[in-house]
Amino acid sequence: MNFEELSKSHLEDLVTQLNKRDFHLETINSASHIIHEASHYFDNMATLSGQHLLLNTYNALNDYSSNFNKTNILNLFNTLSSWKRDYFNISIKRGIYDPDYNNWQYQFGIASSKNASNNKLFVFATFKYRGEEIAKVPFSIEALWETNAMWAEITYNINLAQMMKNEDEMQVEYCQIQNKYTSYTYNSDLLIYSFAAHITSSFLGLGDLSRAFNLSKALSSISLNLPHQYYSRIKRPKGAIFEGLTNALLAQTDSLDPCVIFLTLLENLYESGVDLFQDDFLLNIDQILEANELPDKKVLKVVIMEEMKQLNINLDNAPFSKVYNQQKEHGIEIFKRYGIEGGLNIHPACFINIADTSGCCVFQQDMDWTTGPYKRLEDYMSYEENMRRLVKEWRKN
Image (cartoon, rainbow, N blue to C red; front, top):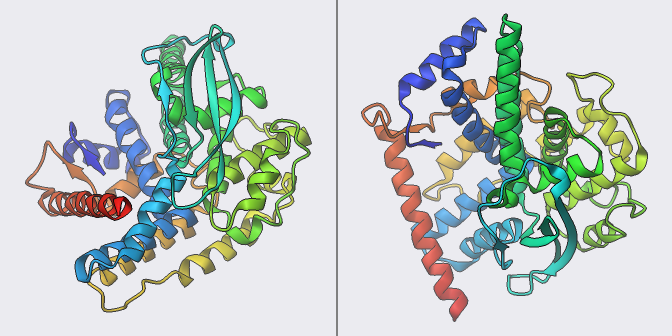
């Protein structure tokens, strides 16, 4: 987690507030930033898809450091390319912001990853503003990561506002929160990242910002964790939203594809008509799973942890084996604590603790304290740059 404009003291102040359960408005910007990045860290460490990506990353690093074997390096970048849909020709008319959702429309299309390592279908959306086409963006794992991070930010902000004793000040803070995060959602520059929140809010009629991101977070967390063995068992939608597309996508999957699961979960919820917001504050994950004919969260948690534990690096004595095993076990411990829902229904200040205990924070304003993490950041950035260069050369040949 790289924080260019923060120092160690920002995190220390937040840890003190967390220990006292007394959060302050004057630290809301640093809290939002740290919680956002810690949510990304969480999804890449403490979800099943994150654990698979972690294994791919360290297998690639081992190959890069030892014998420049192509297999694992290509596998890492092919997985990233497939999940991020970075072979899609994105087009965006920048600078359009309008919080009135009535002025925004979109329709879905199907594209193929024919220029990547496989030939899989995936979903993209054509966004229109006031009837004019302004963007074509793919539905990618980045939208799932980002919806989780934005949920954490929004929920932290709302919880802080609710603690304010002055009613007028509380309403002002609510208004600022609404304006800030509506500008995120209805902003053409950010459509790649707000995709999941857009479709969740639209199809399930969730005009309220908090509810839209709560449910989007729930669907995203399930999707990032669902083992591939359940892809064949999940309920097949009738096609009320995607007209059979989700079934076609499920039929072609031979490995984890969280975006396909997100679309399936959403369509099944739409068709079921289940009321998930009987409680304004808590969202029942098991209701979502039941509507999709999946086991409850306790059963899935056991299965997911078993799969995580079975993931192992190719060579025990490889250069990065030790650090991989440490990261793997750390991620499993976090998952064990927060489960398939990824911290949903828990105060998002938990991500402050995750950041504090990670040992992975780099504060650019406080380099003396972060010399070790900063050096690791530089090293990993160098490894990534060099591996990308190699992959580019190999693909040319």
